[in-house]
Length: 143
Image (cartoon, rainbow, N blue to C red):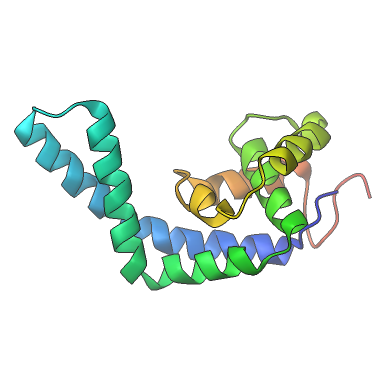
């Protein structure tokens, strides 16, 4: 079982959806500028988009709230959150929860919030991960 309360995950999903609603405008604007210029390579475009998200995020209340909230989670809760997102996006299956947790634990650092908020479709992945694992009201189907 994952070392994170399902209500905590649901809260993160809710706030991440708010953040996602503001992020597409930034990406669209940067891509539009790039299509007009057609002179810079893909890596530079990616850096511009990431910079734009970080700059916008600094002023976005949902971004700030999520960064603070995720940063305040214990290391094991952060590991569980990352593993859950990987399961939700299909990197790991329900049978590979321990592998996902081990990999997330090995990759753990002090930038978990930035990693997760930089993940496109984070709320969808978390929600799908919960569905795949049968997480409801704090219990998995195995309990």
